Length: 171
Image 1 (spheres, rainbow, N blue to C red):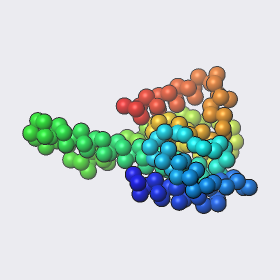
Image 2: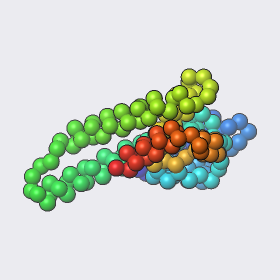
Image 3: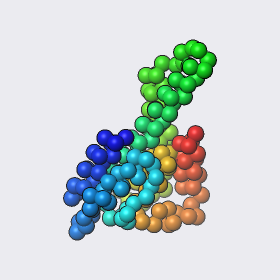
Image 4: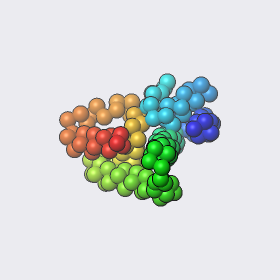
């Protein structure tokens, strides 16, 4: 986790990670990186102040932190069960592969459901859908706009997709 956090902070410190005319201190970059990798969702700056590459890095950190947590947690549970029952459990490599496949399939399905609900060109719609699906499934909590999903508070389909992803990711 520490290596991921350090790499994330160094990457977020690059000028292209924030909107033009804005800057990010080392402390803010580190805080955002820790928050993303640990799936907390807190920032010291308005998330709308990050550029598209900045949002992409934050999303990658959330995704990597969540996968790391799932893998280490699952391997730890397998080790405890093997010790408790005195037999070897499933192959760890297959388990990791299954967790990665499950993550991709669930997030892709959520992305497809959200895709028609956004305005704009296809690239923007795909990016937005992926962003919110990854953050919902991984319990990331970061926002793109600074308004969270306030503009969609009466859109039942969005609540259904985001809520389902959050529950599935929490399991």
